Length: 341
Ligand code: PLP
Ligand code: COI
Image (cartoon, rainbow, N blue to C red; front, side):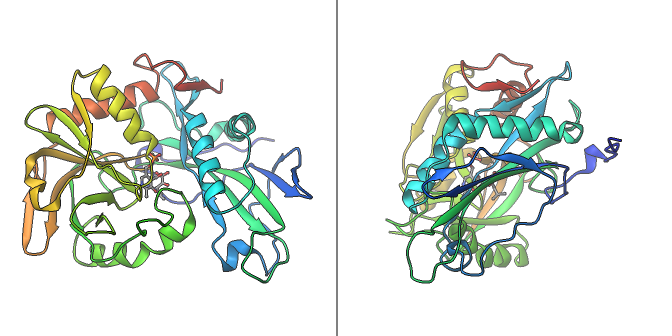
């Protein structure tokens, strides 16, 4: 008999909960197998897997949303599939095809349908696709075999408080190198961020902000999210750099700002010494959605944008439009929504 999923949807955070099914496909002898849904959430892999020693692994993050009518839909899964292909190419892993990626997402959501949070709770079903190098290998070279898998977890806000401003501090550490893997969603970038994150939290901030690794003068990433600022001229400004992760949320917000909110959109350097040019600022990403930035600490300075307690009006409009599109209340641009049921 199917067990009843009984969760307090409104109080979910961003933590692992084992759901019933995950998708797994294995790559061996130069090809992917057909893939299947399994119940076991443990992977048995060789002790000599490249994923364990040389960080040959990448991952993605996307969400399934419940609509007002009880339908379920995915937001731009093709973009995650394509970004995973880019990550795979950067660290020499085989591509998992876009159509199969989307189909696997749909299978996982359908199989775990009872875990898709109800409309209006603010919670969603987070999908975590990942691709890892496995099999027996010792030297520094690509793995002989690979695993692609997707699991699903119902989640609430990534930063405590959700759509409430939080403060960040500029880190002395880099998460990526100028010609490194910053633009790929590979695990090594996140291992490199753990200590910086810890130090920021110890100092009383929600997370750290990274400056560009070449000159340490421009804002790049906000923890595991992209940065945006709003100028007094109603411009949506976001950093342009080869070492930040190309955020699907960020590119979606750029489209929304231009086409739904009649703003101008600029990708350019955001110098930390001129960060006060922004009257509102935020972090954006699948997990973070939009998290308003109250203020940023840099050396001896603390710059407050709109307010440390109130959400700015432009940030609020961006958030409402993005979330409205994701849950089906607002018409989406063509191709952004994939129906699961
Ligand atoms: N930057 C980093 C380092 C991230 O890990 C993420 C999360 O995926 C993002 C930005 C936001 O990207 P997206 O909007 O595609 O989730
Ligand atoms: C996401 O937003 O999907 C992320 O990957 C952020 C973080 C949880 C790693």
